[in-house]
Each structure stands twice: as structure tokens, then as C-alpha cells.
Image (cartoon, rainbow, N blue to C red):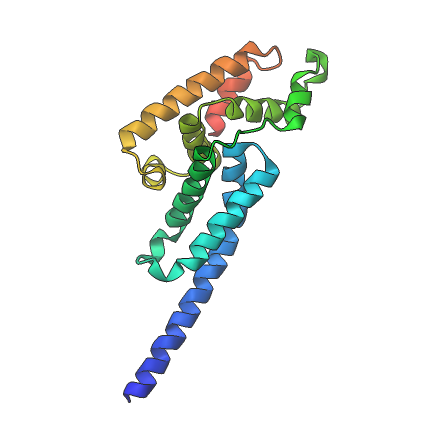
Length: 190
């Protein structure tokens, strides 16, 4: 009988591991959106997601609470991004954002251009503000989840998020295409 119990335990672990891997695969698009929001570069976002996924798969057996998988993976992504920033590698402004800023106001009228402006403004935030605004406003994480991912007190998350939103609003209102009506709409969408 002990032989059979061991086999059942190994099968349970195998199926559990497959579910974790599938959940990790399902998280990949959200991981990419968050990484892209942080760094502004599609290729760097891919690299960060790849590195975070590799580290998560490698350490999957160490995860104690299955329910914590999402937050755990985003914490790994956050650490990968912080490691990248710590190494002194500069954050490049994507070329398409620079090109969009050089257009005259008449050319900047559709919503796609507005999104480019918002992304550019987010890219201009300090790292500590960008991380939080991307997790909460783009990633859809709660303040509590964001605090856990970034290993910060919830009050710090709330104050940094407020500062980041105020800075974004100021930057976007300086642009002739962005109006207070657009900014109000973006605040409601968050």
C-alpha cells in the first residue's frame, strides 16, 4: 500500500505542476503588458518576461501557496526589472514615441496617438512611480497586491500612485492634444 500512496502523490504533484505551468503561460500576456509599461521597449519587455518565467519555472517547487502564484510571478518580474535598472542599463525611449512627439497637433487627433502620448508620459516617470501606476492602472492589481509584489507598505503604494497620477496629469495637460476631458476619462477608466 505505501508504494501506491507514493505513486498517487507523484501523480498529484505532476498534475499540480502542469496546472501551475499552464497558469504561468496564461499570465504571459499580462506579464508582458506590465513589463512594457515599466520599460517602454517591446524587446526588453520580452526579455524581462522570459527571465521571470524561467525563474518562476525553476523555483515552482518552492511555491508554498498555490493561490499566491500570480503575485509571486509578478514579484519575480518586478525583481528582474529592478535588477536590470540596478545594472545601470539605460532605459531607451522607443523610437516610435520620439517620432510621435515631433508631430504637430493636427496630426495627433486619434485615440491611438493619445495612447502613445500616455505611454510616453508613463515612460517619463521615475521608476518607483512607473512600477506602481503600471501594476494598478494597467495591470489591474489592487493596492494590497501591488504592495505585496513590490514589497512596500500599502500607504507607500497609495501615496506613490497619487503622485504618479498627478505627474501624468500635468505632463499630459501640457500637450495641446490632451485636454482635461481626456484626462478625466482616463481617470474613470483606471
